[in-house]
Image (cartoon, rainbow, N blue to C red; front, side, top):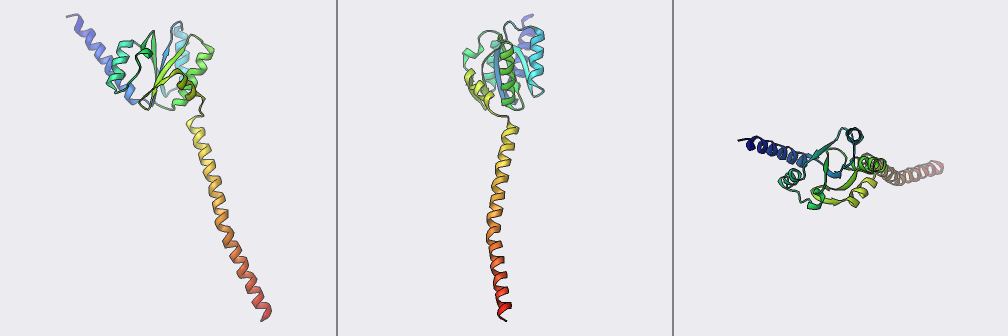
Length: 177
């Protein structure tokens, strides 16, 4: 009888993790061996409000990933594992993990899942090298605005030229009359 509540707890944990996998933009897997509770709290703060950092058992995390329909390589679930569930910008979370890992070498980024596909640690690092979504959108908006301004000037040029030509013809007619 004592086994049933434990199994129910595990099933509930797997269900909760499965929902987190499904509801996240990305999930980044790390090894936290050797980090203190204080450092883990610091890491959670550094990741921001859009990222949940959870220490979990590998078997439960594997089951949850499979339940969420994700194909995560088994080697990512070795050693002590913590998952960063990213509901906001994955680039910002990857940058936060990378910066924290630089300051605290005991944190090891193992890999992750982004848009349903597994990522290696090197791919997470490349993701961290990208500019944030807001910066990319601002650059896109600036480029579009510049192109629209050029287009408007291009379209106005023939009109301006036509107006000048009509004005010149009108002046010529008035002079000859």
